Image 1 (cartoon, rainbow, N blue to C red):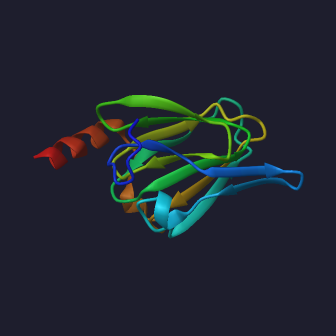
Image 2: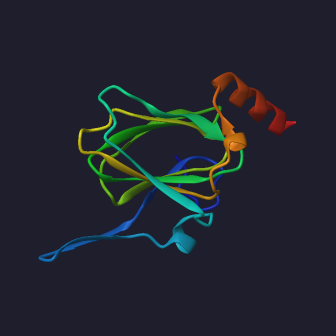
Length: 142
């Protein structure tokens, strides 16, 4: 995956982590590491075994995923490349730009996934069908 700040493709971002006798500290500098302003955040936790989350894309909204506890697998698909990223430490984040199909699955029992989003909730921004996602991607190329 690409690691350029303004990349239109999904990419991982390493956050700074510091450990000492007082514990652990993870730092993210939003204006330096994310190509969007955060307008909304939410946590996903207590996901039943075998239950996937996500399974959609956004037309306009960027998302940044960090598993702050436990682990989760995140599948990302930009219409050409599909890959799976294991989010298993709070120093690893995943940027999902608009028009990225995504799903999260294989949550550990203690997983807590933090999602930072560039837009407030708007049901019209969601694409719930993969076929519709691919059609919209093709329309964008024209």
